[in-house]
Length: 455
Image: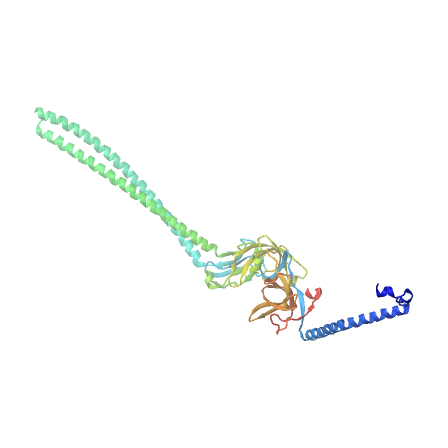
């Protein structure tokens, strides 16, 4: 039997349950113990965090503050505005083609002229005399031709006479041959004396000689015809030469009348009545300048990075300070189709209709093109560029607020903004007005620029 069984039941006491006040006291004590434990673990951590924050704040106070703007891509089209000088579509400097004196001047600067209109008259007596002499030489050559024709006719008549003489000589020779044959038979029969037979034979020989002489005379006459024919050819050639000289002199005489080459306006006049004029442009003194200004042309040097976006036929807008508020419309007429190596530009010609006469040759103008870019470019503020011995660079700020110096290729300067052709993708944060002492990898305090400040 156990000791428990040996204790009487009346002496065993059960433990008492805690009362309500004691239970509350126990909960409070447990809560205080928990708070004490939490305080022991959290307070040092909070103190360490506060010290780290203080350290970071102190470090941030020493970092430079930089203003950051967002680079952006251009749209599919871009406006290109370039300067140019307005020129007449046709401009002619008129020089004298003959020597002489100004006999009459009929126009002055500002005179509107038509093609072929007489501008001035030059007196050139030497040319006039040479022309008269040339015409006389033509008449002399024509007279020589007539004489050659007459000589040819005479030579042909001589040929005809020589042919008649040949015919007569041949007839005489035939009669003499027949008579000689008959008399020879009679002499052989003894009917006639031998003396008479010899006479008839001698006569026949003489007729043969006469025939040969007539044939030779005919050949001579025919040769004479050939010579007279050659004289005619020479006379005709002489006439042609003299006529060519006359035409040359007539052309020289026509240059005494100075005429307008096309419809236009006289923009320069450098002669007075009585002035001595020398032919040719070597004298460096033109008589007049005439400009055709109903259509004007403007030549522009387009930068290489825009050259591939230009095509003949594209529209262009022309503006002038002197015509404020007016826009003149033109088109690209042609390009040089070659980049000038010295300037890396493409020479482009724009033609503008000037029927209104509002534009004047020689004016300075601004030509605006709206181009569809074959490749987008990045725009940043011009003040974000850093140009020094290391080249043209941009100070980019990464997510870690560290500076990265990026080499870029700058394009067109748009005033407040600059195009970047390479080096940026268009999503970077770049520092506006970066300090000179920024270095690669340096940490900075970032101040984001407003959208208004980026425009």
